[in-house]
Amino acid sequence: MTTPAPLYAAVDIGGTKIAGALVDPDGRLRHRLQLPTPAQAPAPEVLAVVHRVLDRLAATPDWPAVTALGIGSAGPVDLAGGTVSPVNIPGWRRFPLVARAAAHPAVAARALPVRLAGDGVAMAAAEHWQGAARGAANALCLVVSTGVGAGLVLDGAVRPGPSGNAGHLGHITVELDGEPCPCGSRGCLEGIASGTAIARRALAAGWHPPGEDRTARAVAAAAEAGDGIALAAYDRAARALAAGIAATAALVDLDRVVVGGGVATAGDVLFEPLSRHLRAYAVLPYLDGLQLRRAELGTDAGLIGAAALCR
Image: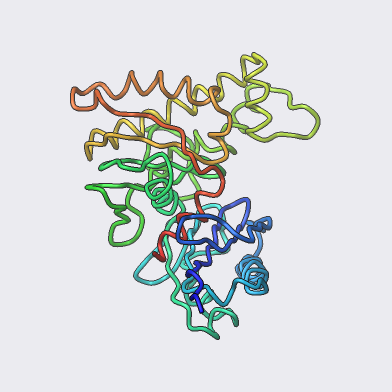
């Protein structure tokens, strides 16, 4: 009798959604689902959604083949303590996510190991395994969505650092006198380039959304139609991203940058100004070959990356 190939349970936790899937050794997803994140709710309510995702995965006929659970979470994270403190989920501060996930009945019953990474690191692991960073020796992979996360590939391997937060680009300062950030600093990249920041900037500048849709996606649609305010909001976000990317590339000598996440679905509205501004900032001779690529795995990158942690 043939032994079934192992599967990995994967959970991707962000400020907007909590997704789950079972992932095979080739990175293919089965039984994918997602639920909205109650981001402003108390800690137990957010955990309850994670457990509901695990409940549904455990109810599938493929669950007996699962050998480990991987979790990619908005950060910062603490790998040593197994805790997370997502900036966009204020109820989770030093929240013991690994322990609470391991205590889920279906996980505990089989003593499944639980692996944790920040969402940017998970995305980097996914794109390096199956996506646009394949074959890159030194790459920066960004998730630009409700927040801005990133992960580093150095010398051919994903490098999360001792705490798990290496490459956490969203909370480097790109505007010295910028607005205060929920992280406690000010002028952070996330406060300029995230989807929520883009929408907020456009609204403050006088953009009139269609109906009640005040999202970055609606701003992108307006930009595609030539709306000057919407175009300016995306140009500002792209310029901030370019400054952060160029600084990172200069620091660790990168050869490739991969950008994904919900904001990246704006396509040329984001990537045209991003490419232009990156050329203006990444000017040192050893950055001449820096490649900018669009992520290939879309919104599934977090899940595929969480599974990659278990390989």
